Amino acid sequence: MIQSLDLWANANRWHDRVVENGVAAGGWLLMAMLLPPFPGALIVFFIAMTTATVGAGVPGRVVAGAMAVPCVFLAVGVLPLLWSVHPSPDTGLVVEFSRAGLATAVATGLRSLGATSALIFLCVTTPLSAQMGLLRQWHVPDFLLDIMSLTYRLIFLFDDVLERRITAQAGRLGYRDFRTGFRSVSLVVASLFVHTLARAQAMERGLAGRGYDGTLRVLDRSPRQPQTHRLVGIVTLQGLVVVFSLAWEVFFRG
Amino acid sequence: MGDTVLEVKDLHYRYSGASELCQRCGGHRTGAIDGLDLTIVRGQRLALLGANGAGKSTLLQLLNGTLRPTRGTVLLEGLATDHTRKGLLRWRQKVGLVFQNADDQLFAATVFQDVSYGPLNLGLPEVEVRSRTEEALSFLGIADLADSPVHTLSGGQRKRVAIAGVMAMRPEVLILDEPTAGLDALGTAQFLSFLERLSARGTTIVLAIHDTDLALAWADDVAVLMHGRVVRRGAPPEVLSDQEFMTGAHLRVPLVLEGWEWATRLCGARTTDGPPRTMEQIFRLLQK
Image (tube, rainbow over all chains, first blue to last red; front, side, top):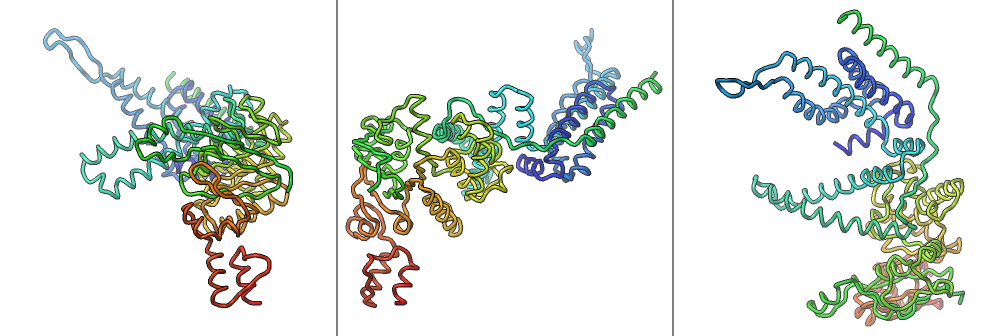
């Protein structure tokens, strides 16, 4: 999944429109958090998903796959809000469905969905390297960018190692039943720990040869300048959603 | 003979804990350096040959200050090197090392960022760093990959990026550890063409390799390592054609020299310029 997300982030139609994507995602994130969840956050969700798929051209299954995992966490987090627990003289405690809890759960769920969709939009349309370049321009501290950069690189290195090791184990019947599978996974995890240390040492040696002194200074390619008409379009669309959501709140819920 | 750019005198290096382990496994010190002497002349194309564990990779890391010797000295342009911050900066500016596994070097998100890392560490202005980065990428034919994430590249492309990252620092000596390992025939040919162009610019190049055919075709000089020492040094045809010595060093006589041996025996082929270095030269001589 992570490989596919990264490939599309680099291959979609809007991959070099870093500022525009950042403004869109940032605006939607704020709107999802601050506007009334219905319809504000719901509209944000639909716009973010539509623009990612139709506008940027990222396949729907990739976007859906990226949304699936946070949505599972979201569902698990929202479910307890539907129930309330009261003390009872007969049985000690009573667990019952809560109408007030339902309203809170829907509001929380919609806000989270809108906010998550804004972030997923950014993930699938903008390469992380470009996002880091933008953050560097905004003077985000170097050590944070170093951590981001190394994490990004190492995720793919370990993903590659993990895949090869699991394939090698599977070829030797390491996953023929639950017991052997469990043992194989524990062996892979243990070996990855050692591999991580060895890899970190090797990388430090490699960087030392190029003058590593504790900081990872890099230069970004000159970013593409944002197009004013696009930025105006994005902000106008966001303004319309804000006005519509607030009007809905005033006229229909009064 | 030109002037000496790097000189190694009585160099020793031992991996921590290796001695104890070696005593248990028969006294063979894998990868250690044991009283090694070596001279590298400016503009030279030197191939370091040796079996696995002969100490080639360790020596390369000692040559650019990545490892600190337990004893002995490395002289850079006649001056003793030191591992102070200033000393290492000067050393690594002059001597660049490309590791066998490109992933040991590549850490940044994109190719352009990674190649810019070394020049930035030299304290150069941004315009100069940008120019050097673009030049290195063009020289290696990977300018179109500048914005690509490193993990999406093939093994050969990663190797080129790793070389570009060192080349952008414009070292006078470029050291490459097993650069053709994992490359296909086309990749190897492209790599050799890159070495030719780099050599034509006056860069001193040191390769640590197993491939004796490559050493014969490419190098001006070969040094054979065994158990952490240089046991033989000389012109490639002379050293590599010594069957007895090569067997003792766990190396193979180049196929080209074996082929030439058969050609002289069967067809009476002769040459006045020494044995051929490539198959193409053999065919030309046989045509004559």
